[in-house]
Length: 97
Image (cartoon, rainbow, N blue to C red):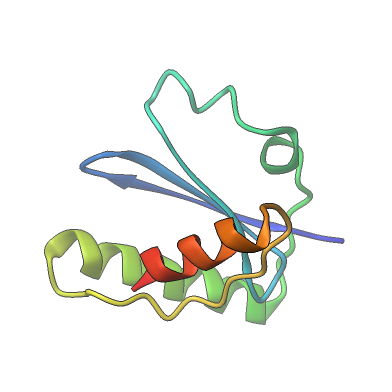
């Protein structure tokens, strides 16, 4: 599987996102010292350059930008859970907005 990465510099740190081409698989917030200590999946993901995967990361970047400006309250990014219990996944969806 090929992955696409996005690192967004935000007021709370670097928002690190991993996509499978269509869906968000992983999200973490790191400070500048932690950027080199990411999960193996994120750190060693092969990058996809399909047109669709570029649109997905661009859309996510725009949503993060709007959120941190205070213009967005609910994210529309599609999420694909690859970890977590059913309960954890419900909590994550509730936090999404």
